Image (tube, rainbow, N blue to C red; front, side, top):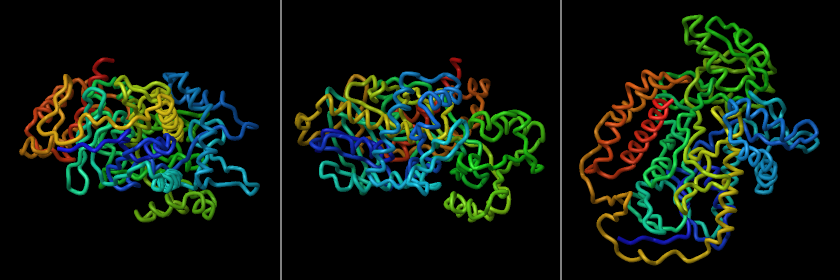
Length: 500
């Protein structure tokens, strides 16, 4: 089989993948893989905005760092956090140069929003579709770069390293295509689909974490999982529509089943503007008090036109479910939202595997601690993906792709740690119901707060599922790769909980 050579493979086309590609030296030959359509990613779904200290008269790096530490339970990597906060304003400015249209005040300055956990207005936003605005702008620039080959609906089925080279098996247009490169950047997003209910896109199955784990990379703090308190409560859908933190920032109230405010009982100082993990735990406490899991978010006391103008996408989406946020409370409930852990990296996205980088949600920079502060996710994706590109540029990876493996290669490429799987291997279909079982076991083991007894009980079954999937003989499909990734993520999470 023939491997096509590139200087670099980037897996993932959210903000981290796109911004990495745009910041790389133009002499590098880059392959950028998008698992689905370009806008099917968590980045494009991000509503709130990008937190950054752009108004130095009323804000400071120290204040932003302090807010992030408080939200993260002081479990943050302080050195990387300083990098994040101090370099964030540069990337806000750079995004504007790339055509990102942030909301502005009449005087032309950025309109900065407030969200839970923040002590200052510092959220640069584009109404309530900031992620979509950023991703769309970055895509335009990527598409005109002659050194970047962009493949949409290109599912990375297998990735391994042999010697100095990475090898990728990609399903694209119903055909297996094979690529090799000296450098690989994983920007594949989170693990939301390991849960029954998540705000994440269908692509969030932990693929990059799985590939990195197979190659021997260190995976850190995968049990640091954030549950967002205000997902629209629709039990008929596993993909829960998020109602942004910014709605509470604009003054929305949280209500219990009796349509009464309750946050004053648990967090009298911060109320609805408490960090996400705090609000989620308060909802569970109120649920115990009332015996009901009916909760609501109410911003109907604000001016209706202001609400529609500030949150046009949320207003329209919720209206599709039969609720008008300008007139009535809407049902909400916590669900899985974000991963703070992942592939361990340094401040330039370097992993423990030579030539392998990671950026965005699949990486673990440590900046978030045990709970991410609102709107620090796009900030992390921007700052650290740029630093990934700068590190690669500094290392001058400007050599032609290694020609050692050009030509026809057949069979299985063996290394000490990995089996590179070709589509001819295995004809059995993956067992039915495995993904559903993984989700149910995870939901029981860890929802908002870990259930250590359930985690202990369920770990052996997850390990058994993982062993079955890795035993070989199954047809190599996107579903198989994703299921292996989900099983691996669940295994690592439960293993971490059992080691507490």
